[in-house]
Image 1: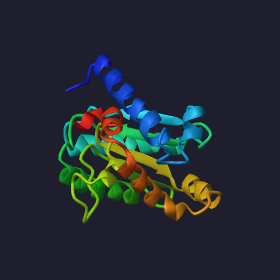
Image 2: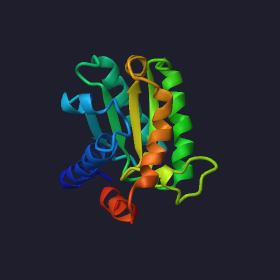
Image 3: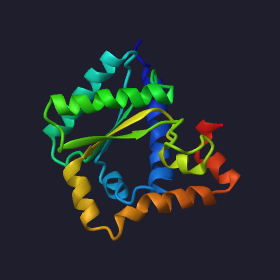
Length: 186
């Protein structure tokens, strides 16, 4: 089933809002603002309805990213609105995504980071605010360049403290702030 242009526009706008207000606005990723300003972040919306179709779309997005320099395109958010609603299914798919990286020789060049509306860290309760750091409006496969990550981390003081700082920030949000920033979780 193909998504309509209107649906793709709506989904893209929701992800863009999340990226600007949550990821960048709350500084969850201190490295995202510059590529966003420079229009080096691609938001692709998948129309896949099964794992095979999604693997092909993932492969196409990775190939597209590989053909461009980081100055042209730094990263891609592949949004998956039509499947992987269950977090366990999403995690299972991440294993297949890693196999694509391996199969096409992209290990060490790219990695897939994960965001999901029901994201839940291991050994953490589902309602724990720490999960908000990775909760997005839709399942998202975030395609990152390894070299860009290494470069950014080398110039950032104490990058190992980023997750801890993010969790603390999520815990300090008021219920009203959570409703405003994460309306898709209501």
